Length: 137
Image 1: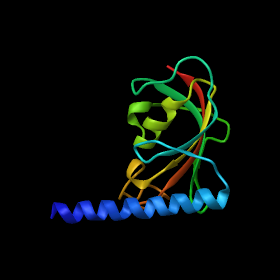
Image 2: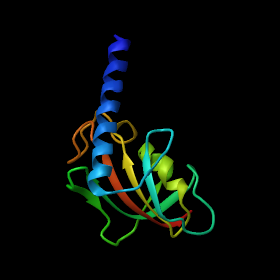
Image 3: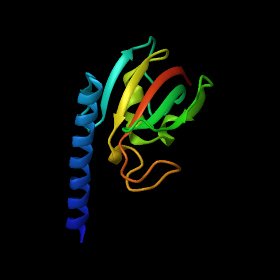
């Protein structure tokens, strides 16, 4: 039983990787890949120190699916979250920048919401986030 679950995860990871590579090519993006599978592009490193999992981060962000469908955005009104409470893709990606920095993340489903439907986000969705790190506490 466990083996079939692993195969399904491997199958989903392969689907995500193909979808991400197709998206990167279609959009003409130049991205880095973290060992976790997270793709990122640092647009502005920011200054000061990097946040850790123990910090609360204040961000402006826009989240959308690979088809361009926006599922959430702050629309210029920053919001604060404990980094530890966020999806793994954010926990890995946000500490790559400092206060004032901005980053583009392409999050495979395994580092997003996985097999869960969440609001308007279907299960097994690759997520794209444009994030500006406004503050760290």
